[in-house]
Length: 317
Image (cartoon, rainbow, N blue to C red; front, side):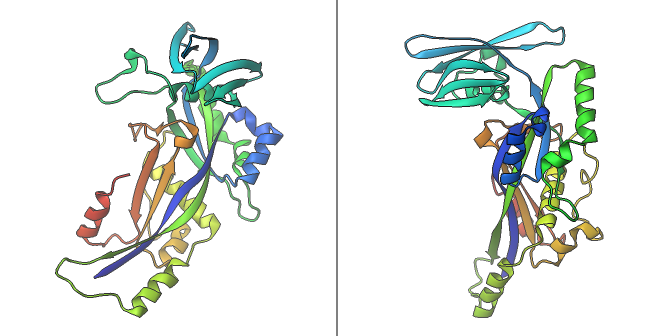
């Protein structure tokens, strides 16, 4: 009988921002109140609202994006009025809509997320495998902000970020008309416990072994270590274009930055990022399939049995 314990790092709250939002007081307040220490920089086509009209049951919203020659490419979205109805352009990047009969004010860059939540996809976007979505975000860089002495959030880091400047410069030079977005992430930790035994093994756990499991489950790394670990694991999973560290080397026991993790009584840990709440799926050059939920497990002991590795490799998101 084998006992395996670990930690699962999951996203509990997310928010999308534009780089220019980081200088706004209300955005700084939201970041601070929600403890956003992890950030993802991504890109997708930028869309502009053009018109909305409605029939008895359906709303028809027209948006457009600019191609490489700066020509407008228009798309019409058909959706039930009970789900989504465009009300008013409030200017300065804000729209007022009726979403499921509730009046909401949304940002211009989230309009495409609402439209794709309740319409039939245009035929030209259908592939043999899946439906591509304009709301999908390609991850270009992953980082974190915490600070050695004082706790910092992502707005402090990104206001002075050389990679963000580099990404914006490349986007501008290629004239791709891509929109740069920032995804702020709040995380928390859950316990993982598994007992493995062969079918012909009738042994049971002793009270001492059960107490050890309970006591070990209370042990945690520091918040700084948890944030650093989550960041490194995300980088290793997505392998974004603009990241260098942790892309290919991760969980090396000789690395001092992992001391707290290797000193914990755990065998495995996992990361779980779920972006369905913001209506955008994530992908990268390495993870080519856009998904709402991305899950990855890591073993702190490379000598675990092949059976246990196989067991976890068969766990589906």
